Length: 395
Image (cartoon, rainbow, N blue to C red; front, side, top):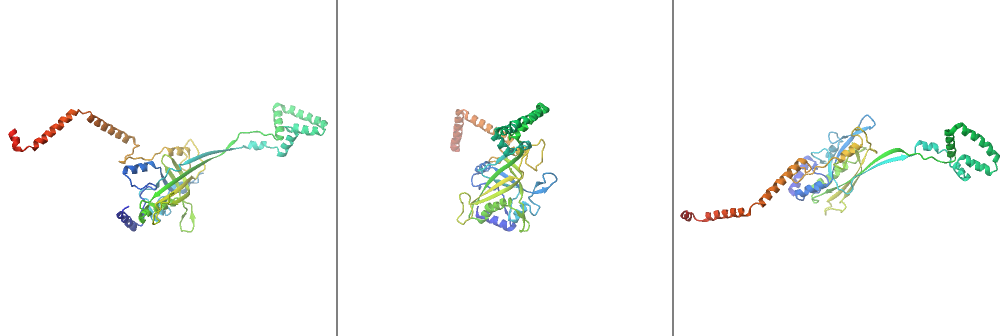
């Protein structure tokens, strides 16, 4: 940054008192050829963060997120201006992040025992241990073995009669049920299929935004490219206070990274500021040359659902999930044209084809004709060098 530009920036700040952050946070300084700068910009994933506030609504959703940029005293951009910075021409925070930890989504289902399983576990551990010691897999056999061991044969004959009559009275089905109860009373169990309990949706989004200071020796440059972006990013995830005494919840967001995800409503769970970056880039005057800011995002909802109709924007759905991956970032060439645009691509290809045909036709031109043309031009130039008096005599 030159001295003239620095002086202009300082005078602008003295006039307005606000430093404009008119660049994408996380992009390296434009210190290369224009084409190289464009390739660097296109190669980095970009995200947009829309700060918002909850708005109460009727229904089970309780509230929905609405944008909170300006207008309200506690709106994001209004608060940012109170800290001496602004983001002109936008209603979102745009940042480029390093692809060191790409987003990971986890979808889980939990299954467990149903209520019938509890009803069938009627035998106590004592009864189960007793039947196992007695060597019987049902209650009647276990009792028979125990009574027989103590010489109670007459008692067994007396008990066998009523039991047989009960089976005859209940019939085949009833007898089977009585036999099942007999086995369960001895501690045998039935394996019922598990049933669904709940589902979970746990997005794990981490961004590392690397802030570069092109001129650490300049306080104005450090303020614009280091201090300002840190203030803007910190304001996204820290509590808000009206009077400086009590504080309440921070902003809730919509976070969009084209082609990767579209998270709404989301929150920032963690902000880590690494001053100097991993390489501890600090100038001699102890002004920071690089700062890494890591942001961890999460969803306010712990589940994602699929429905035959749209459920609105209040909660994560499968339809919103796949729509977030169907978007794309605009990628331009050196002239600023969108190279993904089909119409531009077709016109560019036609122009390249016409240039190739013209070049080929020139290469196929007759070499003798080119020599003849050169000789004719050379002769005309030599004639022009002959004095006019001599040319008149020749004529």
